[in-house]
Every structure is written in structure tokens, then in C-alpha cells.
Length: 198
Image (cartoon, rainbow, N blue to C red; front, side, top):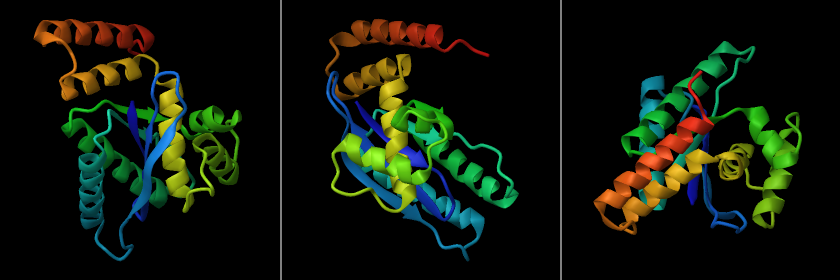
């Protein structure tokens, strides 16, 4: 399965792609940052983020997109920009027909380090170890994007099964439209059982 993790932000939007085969370890495919100039109008900055994400999706063809869930901060301006960027990520993923999942910062930290209170340096260090990298990805937004992807691979559950089916269908590896439809229906039912509406 291939996951595109996105750490949303207006100035720096971290993006990371991670693959994992069943029973295998996560492998980094690519990592980077989509940057926008602070002096540009917000609407134009969001367009640049959208264009950057389109490029990443076209190049890497992930099976699922995961985004850090925006949480309340003291700086309202910062949280607004993050929420706007997050909305663009969700829209682009949905337009590509991909599952889009949200993970909280504490959920990601707990999955990667074992503690929901870990700092950015600890997350970067563990991402480096998990992916077998020589050095932590820089800036921290890039490491956070990889952490999101790893978190989703490890905690995605039924959503990952649905994304795997989506990938098989897209690759033409499912046998016949009836089998595909039945498999899709089973995956949707499993996802609903695992994540009932609140």
C-alpha cells in the first residue's frame, strides 16, 4: 500500500510518500515540502498548494491520503491557515477518488514514538529509525508528513483494506466487475463496522 501523508500549512506543507507491503516494513518513496510565499494573497497560496499536491498525486499515485487533523491553537491566524491548507488537501484527494483520512497530532506521536507528548525532534528521530534513513528529513514538516503516513499504515485498519482494494481495481488486478463490486461492498461494510458513525 502507498500512503501520501500531508502536514498542512500555508507557508510549508510537508508531503511524504511511504510504501508498505503486507508483513513488510515501511519504505520511504519521496519526501518534500510545498512552499508558498508569505507575501502572496491567501487564495493564490492555496492554489499553489493545490497545484503542488496535484503534482505529487500524479507522480506517486498513492492509494490513500492522510492529513493531520487541525486542532485549536492560541494563534488563531496560524490555525486558520492550517485549516485552509488542510481543506485543499482533502478536496484534492477526494477529487482523485482516494480515501482521505485524518489523524490527530497526539495519535501520530503515539504511533511513532509510543508517547502522545513526544516533541518534533523525537518524532524525527523515530521516523529516521523506522524508515532506515541516514538523517532525519528536514524541515520538521517533511518528517511530520512521513510520520502521518507511517501512522496510517500501522493504524488504518479497515480503511487500509478499502484502499488496497481501490489500488487493485485501479491496477486492473481484480477479476471481473462482479468480483470487484462484491469486494468493494465487503470492504465498505468492514470499514463501517470498524468506524461506526458518531
